[in-house]
Length: 116
Image 1 (cartoon, rainbow, N blue to C red):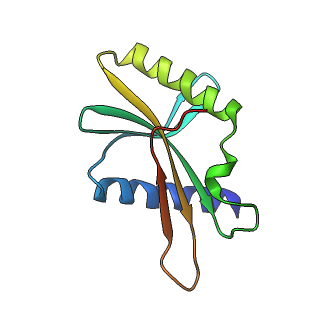
Image 2: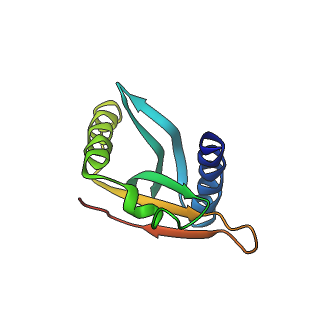
């Protein structure tokens, strides 16, 4: 179920980001063993976005599951990306957490400019 939830969440994330003025550049961009869920741009800022999808609050809020190790991976991925596509002056790391609800609308919680 987890694989499915993740994929569904990413599709919802792409949708939500586009509705909020982001241009999606890549989904699941890989470098070596690192991967970034979504790379997007808005107002000349390059965003590296980690998508967290949850079906319940049982394990705490989704944004709590981004560890310092995961964050270092995001930074390595970003460095590799900028090596391939230089010229970005501003980059930031974001977490888009999606709580899937059965009875009501899904909740999107966007945490911008994360630094761990």
